[in-house]
Image (cartoon, rainbow, N blue to C red; front, side, top):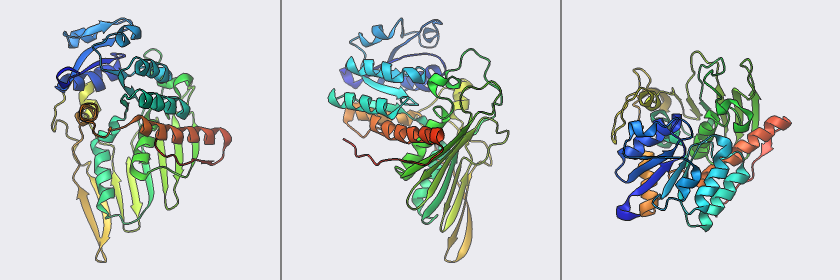
Amino acid sequence: MTNKTINTAILGYGFSGSIFFAPFLHLHEGFLLKGAWERSKKKIQNDYPYVKSYASLEEIISDDTIDLVVVNTPIDTHYTYAKKVLEAGKHAIVEKTFTNTAAEARELHELATVKDLHLFVYQNRRYDSDFLTSKKVLESGKLGKLKEAIISYDIHLPELRKRGTVHTEKPKSGGEFNNRGSHITDQAVELFGFPDAVFADFAIFRKGGEVEDYVDVILYYADKRVKLRETNISVHRQDAYIFHGLNGSFFKSRSDMQEDRLLAGTIPMKTHWCDEPENEEGRLYYFQDGKKMVETITTEDGNYYNYFEAIYQSVVNGAPAPVSGWDGYKTMLVMDAARKSMETGKMVTVNPVKEY
C-alpha cells in the first residue's frame, strides 16, 4: 500500500454504504474511497465526485489499486462475495450478519488466514455510547458477581416496510435475528464470553410477515444467564442493558444517536460529535460499606470513526482487529444454535472453540 493509504471500494451505495461506510472512509486520512458498485441508481459521485461508480464486482476485484473491499450487500450474498474478494487477494470488511451459517464464517476465516489477509466484521454497535457505558460499568466491579443480564433491541415498526423488497424481511436473509439480533449476540459474546448452551423462541407478529420479528434467546453460562430480546412492536422501548449482580444493578437505555444524526445528514467527526438526549444516563444501584448507593452514570462517547481507526491500525501496523473473522465465526455459532433451538424446541449445547 503506497504511503500507508488503504484504497477501499464498497459493494453498494444504498443505506449502509452511504450512511455507515462512505462518510467515515472519506473522513479518515488513512483510507482513500475509490468508489462503489452501483447496479441501477448512480449516486455516489453526487456525494463524492472524486470516486468511481463500478459496474460489477468483477470490475472491483480486478482493480489492482484496491486494497480493501466492503461487502455490504444483502446477507445471503455475504459468503459468496467475501470469498471472491479474498480469493482476489484483497482485505475485506463484511457487514453484519457476517454469513448465513457458522460453517460459511469458518471457511472465510480459514481462507483469509491461508492467504494472509485481513478479514473484519462490521459490528458498529460495539462503538455505540450506550454499549460502551454498560461495558465500563461491568468492568468497574460495582455490580459484584454478575448473575443476570438482559440486552434488548426494540423498535416500533408494526407493519412491513413498503419501500420495495427489504432483504431483512425475506427468508433468504434470515429475518430480524440476522438483523438487529446479530448486534446483541455479538455484544453478549464480547461482554460475557462463549455460552455453554442456548434456548430460543422466535415469532412472527406482523401481518404478512415471512420471517421472525420477535426474538427471545437465553444464553446459559455456568454462573449466570443472559437474555437477548428484540421486537418490532415496542411503542416505548425498555432499557437496552439491564445487569444484575450480587452487589448491584444497572439500567441503561439504547440512547446512541449516531445513526439518527447520519440519516439527518450530519457530517461525522473524529472526536466527539454526537450527544445523547437528556435524561438518558445509566442508573447504577449498589451497596458500599453496607449502604445502598444510587449513581447516575455519565455516558461514554461513542464514535464509529474509532472502528475505522482500528481497522487502519490492524491493516497497517498489525494491531488487533476490532472485530475479526474469528469473532464473527463465534457469533455465528451462537446464532446457529439459537436457530436450531427454535426448530427443535430444545436447549442446544454450544461447543467451545479455540482460535487457530
